[in-house]
Length: 112
Image (cartoon, rainbow, N blue to C red; front, side, top):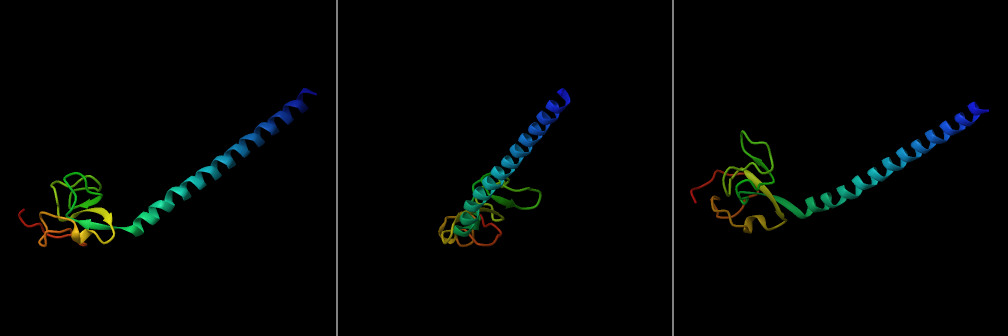
């Protein structure tokens, strides 16, 4: 009789673990989907702007020998970019840009 009770108890325990794991997987999947949605919308509303980031404050790409975000070596580095609201890049001040404003592509800095 004890063997039968243990068998039912083990089956119940396995069923609970399976249900818990499935619920957790579903919750995480939903969370990742929700988290990704604003990022996609944000990407559509923003654009990369070169030459506007301050030292160590770039979003990504800061030239040879650097990895990514936060690696720019100087203010307004021409090969480092930051995300800015769409349509504002070329209106944003860049003290090293040939035009004096941010650029849509990386550029060689001029003396500030």
